Length: 315
Image (cartoon, rainbow, N blue to C red; front, side, top):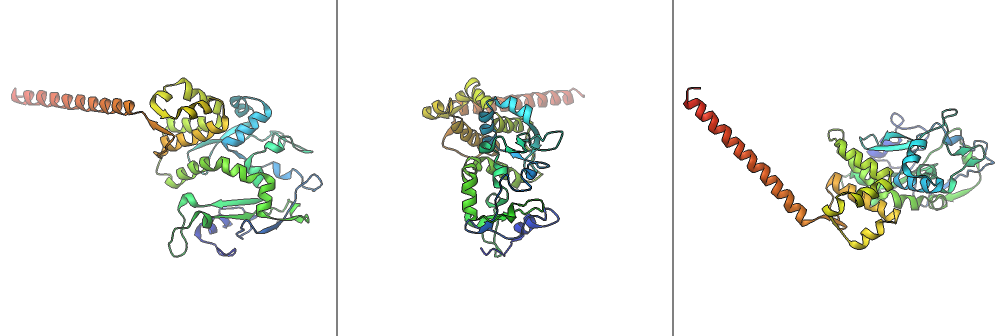
């Protein structure tokens, strides 16, 4: 794709009506070169760390709770507030800005106190990424685009940011590697696909309250999700490889990925090889449904006989 050709979805992304005018309307590739550097000597240092909505991914939460050495529920209560993801009804959390200056709770005049574990959103700035693969985008001729064709980058250039005046030049690829974005993208990929899949359904479809609670729990508190797996009837319902069961007892990353598969299966019916409902549970459910149907038939017949008798008696 040429850098200066925008399809309809890209026009929406770059449109001034719906999006900030500080997004440059130029598509960038991994090899596009940008001029930018952020460091304590820049006049605007930490200015971008306030008056902003920083959504936290499950991996962000995991890394920050490890860094602060606090359980997830304490972290959520102290440092976050609820939000909805991508204009859907899927619940998530964002960092709670300080009341006194509306800045990130982890930023100081000297910089970020959790820099090596900072959230994904902070790592992207000023290079954003657009990925339309979940929306099934098409080219001008109506042909489905491949994953590579649907992903591109763009530059956020705000007036207050003086980092663009620095002399450092590097490619988008080099910038992403330096910021650790590639690792975060891999960690967040399956979770983001869940959100985008929900978004593609539109407002006419709604998640049940139970589904919302499950999504929120699995996305924000791995400790609670682990207890759900091992202390409920979960393992009696699902057939899971014994080696994986042992791994998710202690491996948080493996548990996080497992939670994404579980959510895809329960929320959207996605088939996965790592977990299947046990055959005996399926048979139990079939028998339960059959019993309910039999009861309904018997009840209907009884009502019919009563109605017929009433009519026969002149009722």
